Amino acid sequence: MELEEYFKKGRAYIWRETFAMVKAKKIDQEAFTNIVDKHEITVIIDEEKLDEENVIEIMRGWKIFTLDIAFPPTFCGVTARIADALAKENISIMPIAAFTRDHFVIAEKNMERAKAVFEGLGIRVSE
Image 1: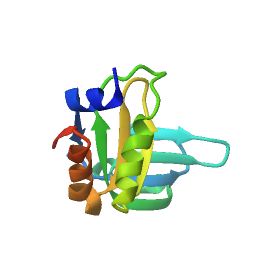
Image 2: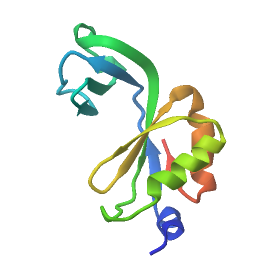
Image 3: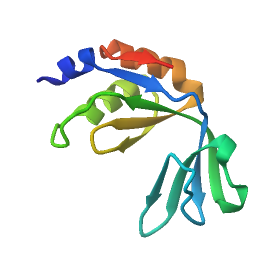
Image 4: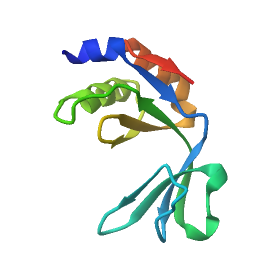
């Protein structure tokens, strides 16, 4: 199946929570996700669940768009197509790939414009 067909048959949803992106002292079990590399720990967490004691640096006001389409893990070009369309509208993202679903962390101030971009690609969006 071609990428456009997946987009037309699928949908995305916007999480109702507003998230913070945190450079953290340790992982947080309440987080949407924890990203651990050899340089830092990044925690993406609902702002209402944030543990201020765990914060080294913080950026608030993020929404998560989840592409609710189960792609095979070997399928290529999904993030690139969406990132390119968003970049043309000057909307930056932090993409996160799960096993079969992709998530896009997008500034809340860009939410409506990002929604229009997803819809322009043929993806139905719900909140």
